[in-house]
Image (cartoon, rainbow, N blue to C red; front, side):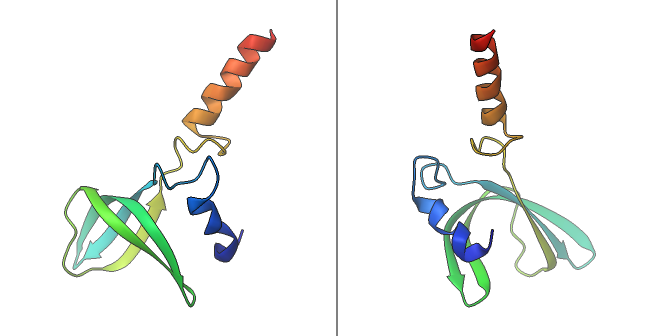
Length: 99
């Protein structure tokens, strides 16, 4: 799915990220030191080809400067994800009910 198609799902529908935004792990190279910061991603905005989020730090400390940034978005708990905790719990419940 391209980014333009993804953005409406952020705030529309019963399974949107609006009431419960995802966490992400930011891995940031600060000089020769790797810093990891956990943030809550909010307010996605597409500006030309750049997807910009507001990040609220929940663990770690954001460095003033950094490079080589990687973002890993947490999918656990997202109900429509096949490997999510919520998805597995729903499948297990249905199986128990059917047998």
